[in-house]
Length: 162
Length: 287
Image 1: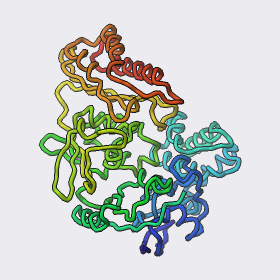
Image 2 (image 1 turned 180 degrees about the vertical axis):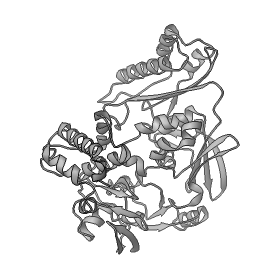
Image 3 (image 1 turned 90 degrees about the vertical axis):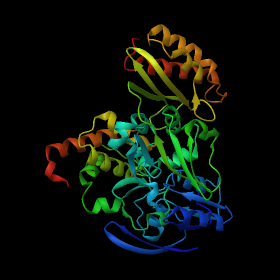
Image 4 (image 1 turned 60 degrees about the vertical axis):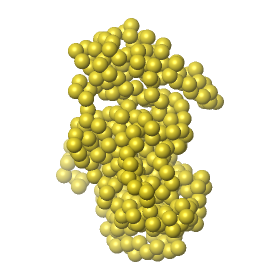
């Protein structure tokens, strides 16, 4: 019961043989050693394992590796290395929008997708977008502040990010 | 919290899916978006020998108008229910409900077909399908059939689907002239399971309610049509007095269970409040 899959992860083609039961999250972490994808609840509630599948956020814990055969996946490492979320990372740092940091990769995915779709969200829209991301340390005020600040900066310097 | 050992096959046609299901003597589960199936595996609520991935079958995709009816393919993701212009125009009640379904990332993968087939009593889309009097298209080894949504949902996670059947599309009838809609739910947090929710389609004719379809969810084991309230409202002008009467009548339509976190009386109260708000907000209401 081994299936061969070919997919693109962070811009590189990956060919692997996987058991069908293997989740995309475990595949990314244990096979590809991309440990920026965090596992919290493993049932789609906490949002720590979000990755981009075909450019939109999805739960890597709710997706089996065999299901993304032929797909394009991007993880936190990919977004970080190509600089797509550098301003969000800086804003989270400036605003102390993380303590333990466990939820932060998922927060980055949600914030990145939100600002791509809606460059100037209001606070209610940011909160709504974050409704599937749990943070158990800071509360959400600082996280909303950081995303709002990053959005304002992008609006002021639209050429600074892709 | 890891899925049990199982096998996986991806099929590109309905007939291949039925063959795979039959070869496994039914010890198989169809996989589309996987957002109910995968957690059910990791929580060990089920352990089929085989997953049959139907997500790339062409017939399950697409949104199109057919003789005035809107056909929404089963693989349509929840996010598309929000953004698709044909749904916004011809099935606006689905578009109104979609932002309430789970959270944004779930909506990127979850599918309308999986949602309806799963028949979660707290889910929004089944209530919308009933309110709009949709038809659910099923295909199985024995053939193809269309089941009215009113007859599709039978009980808790229970539908009219036979083992091996695949839900291929939901068909939305043409909107009646004078259609007005309303949808809302009361949840502790956006995206959480609703404590009570309702979907309404009505037909306004010169200030009078010519027809109305009211379906509640999260108040019973399946979507619940408020037939007594519907009967009361047909032919009436929607003013404050009529809305109060409708709220009083609702007790006869709903019979929620007592639950530790939400007693039946509280759920009924929430449903009455919601009904009042939705009726009062209907275009043409004089409340």
